[in-house]
Length: 549
Image (cartoon, rainbow, N blue to C red; front, top):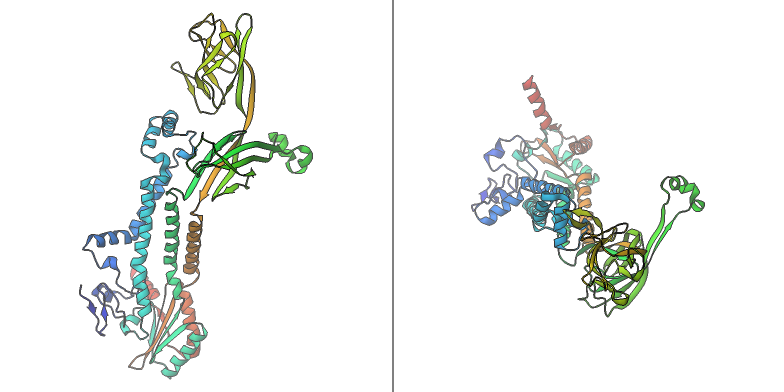
C-alpha cells in the first residue's frame, strides 16, 4: 500500500495520524482537532489500516476492546450458570451412568438437560476452555496491535517538533523572553536535576521521564496471558488433579490419577478436647456443642505397583513409606499431595445375622455380611443357606414397590434375601432391614435375625497435583508488577523550542496526573524565565460553560 509522505520529507506508514519525525497532522480529521490524541502517538495500528484478507479480519476482530469485554461477559455468565447445580466433582457417584442418574433423580428434567449440555462439568468443557482461549488470543492481539507501534513511535521520536504538533498539546505556552538561549540552557540544567532524560537538538529540548509506565497495561496483559495459559493447562492430562477418595480402616485403594500408587489405611485417630485441659479456651463451646475436634489423622502406608494397576488389583505392591496425614500436613509423593479433608466415624463395616425358626427361635447357623463386598450366597449347617438377591446400601424406602438406595455408602443397609432349607428347597423370600423384616411373597417359616454389627472409621482424603501453580504465580506476579507500573508512575514529556521569530514555545504531555507535569514546569520556570503556559482543556471547558450560559 502507498506510504504517506509528510511535508518534512519523512515517509510514514499508511494509517499514521502524526508524522513520526516532525509531528505534523497527516489527515484532515487530525488537523481539525484542537488537541491531538497521544495515546498511541498518532502511530499506524494494523487493525485500523488493513481489512482485506481473512487474517486481517480475524486480527481486527480480536484487537477490539469491545470484543474482549464481551468475551469476559460470556465467561462470567457461563461461570454463573455453572453454580446453579453442583458440579460433577461434588456428586456422590463413580461413573457416567450414576452421575446421569443422580442429576435426573435429584433435579428432574432440568437436571437431565443440565447434564446433557455438559454444564455439570462446565470448567473442563471444551467450549468453556475455548472462551478462555479466545480471551487469551484477544489479549495477545490487542496488545501487539498497540504496543508495537507505540514502542516504535516513542523510540523514533525527534527532539525538534513542528509548531502544529506543539500547539495541539494540552499544556502549551508561547511568548518572548529575555535571553532565550540562556533560558533554554537553564531549563535544561534544571530538568536534569529533576531526573528527566533530556535531549537537545540546537535550540530545542525534549525532556522525558517515566516512559516505562506506558508499558504497564501491556505487562498486565502479559501476566493475564500467562495466568490464562496456566488455567488452560489444567485441562490437559497430567497437569492438574483434584480427586476425592474415601479410605476405610484396613482398606487398600488405588490413588486416583496416579501411576500405580496405592494407599492403605492403618488406623484413623480422632481426638477431642476435654474440659479439664481446655476449660478457659473452649469451656463455653464444649457446653454448647458437646465436643470439639482436637486432632483427626489417618495413619497410612503408601505402596507402588505397576503403572497399569488400578483399584481392585493391588497385587505386586512395593512398600514406599508410612506417614500420618493430618489437616495441613499432607502426604507428599511424586508431585502429588494427599490431604485430610473429612471423616466419618463408626461407618457400618459388617452385619452378623442368624437364620432362625420363627416359632422356636432355633438357630440354623450364623453368617456375616461384609457391607463393602457382600457375597451372593452364605452356606450354613445341615443344608441351610441364605442367598442375597439384592443389596441396598442406603435404603430410603419404596417407589412404586421398588426399593431405593440413595448412595453406595452403608448408612441404612437392606437386603432382599432367599432362605433355603430342607423343608423349603425352593426358598423363602424376605426383605431384611435393620429394625424391620418384610415378607413380600407371603408368611415364611424362617427369618433372618440380627445379631451384631461391626463398625470402622472412614477418612475423607483429597488427592491433588498442580503443575500449573508456578505458571499461575508468575502470571499473578507479572500482573501486579504491571498494576504498580501503570498506577504509581506516569510518562511526562516537556518540549521547549526557540522559534525563528524569536519566541520560545513550551508544551507538555503526560498520560495521567496532569498536576505533576504542571508542577514540574512551574519549578523549571522559576529558574529559567519560561513563557506562561495554559491548560487548553480547561480553556475549552470554560468556553463551553460560557456558551451554555
